[in-house]
Amino acid sequence: MYKLIKALKNKGLKTENLKQEIRLFLVAVQFLTRLPMPALNNYQPLWLQQSAKYFPLTGLLIGGLTALVFAVLFWLINPWVAAIGSTAFSIRLTGAFHEDGLADSCDGLGGSFTREGALNIMKDSRLGTYGTLGLVMALALKVSLLASLSLPLAVVALVLAHGFSRFFSILLLSFLPYAGDLEHAKAKPMAQSLDKRQAAFALLTLVPSLLLPWLVLGSLPLGSLLLAWLLMLFTTSYMARLLNRRLGGYTGDGLGATQQLAELAFYLTFAALAGGQF
Image 1 (tube, rainbow, N blue to C red):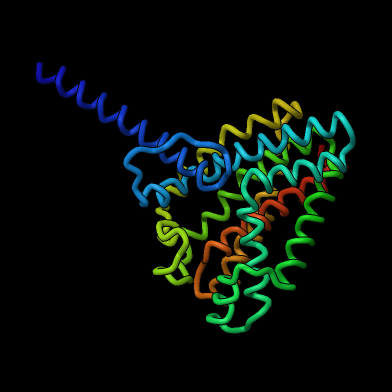
Image 2 (image 1 turned 180 degrees about the vertical axis):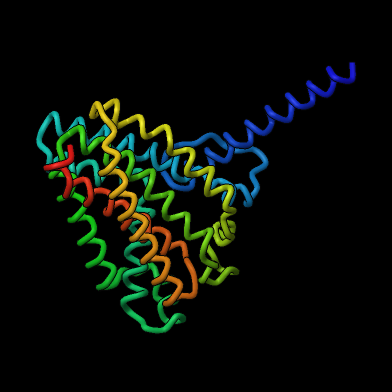
């Protein structure tokens, strides 16, 4: 009887743990996208910080939906319309969440040489010259790179780039302190560090996505993927050093900028190697 009761308790704990993980995934989707999500009962602010491990998985979801839009427009019209339309769709899907971070980071880091000045500029909701130029250049480069890819390559690139770029961006949570004003942070739980085990779990959620190249391309271009990941890692490392030197750590805008640059790094690698590797 004791063993039976213990087994039932363990089963109940496992069921509750599974429910909690589902809640955390829904929190991640709700935070990063504009997709309608069911109401979460007894919501706790700490869930947002804990949900960061599902940001890469949410990125795969965003990338998958964006790739679907790209494929439809590519088939119906042409690659340029597909690149522009899918990019516009991803911006609408995420509410320009990361693009806003890129623009604010360009304004702050470009508009002031002091930490305090840069942080004050980044808090300003108005868009400045540096932010405008940075955002326009990033979007133009993204559209151009996507338009240069074949349909199968673009589908693979969109899904993997959205997923892995969010993994690399949350690495800053593990290796840098929060640089902003904690009292006035828009999302205070995200101003807390990410446990190394959570980062490892986030990476594991991306492993099944490696089946996509097999399904779409018929092979796994491991060499090209390794180069893409190395360039994303280099980009993330550069952003980590820059943010640490200029601001003393990461901010929410810095995370968004890192995600955007890492995503571009993935597209850039695929576009550069498309002629000889695929």
